Image (cartoon, rainbow, N blue to C red; front, side):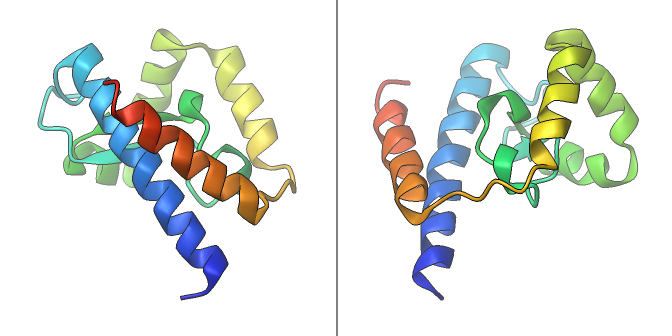
Length: 121
């Protein structure tokens, strides 16, 4: 794996662990079905790198709901509108489609930030 690929993997892991912990604390389980939190759910797909690590775009979820987003996104987007806002969703969409690229040092900073934050949850 390339250095950049390793940085993404480590940043993903740190952010995912943090998001799952704070979601568990806030909702007590998957916010969609109350199942066990097993993964990090992205409202705007994780392939849209400008919002991949944006906490507004993330919530912990169970595997079933995370997979269901692929086939049934409307109910999850409606949840986002209700719990967060339609305006915020639209802002994330615009930002997600931008061509901004994270630099290697930014990926490492993201990893360090969320590894540190995880110790306080």
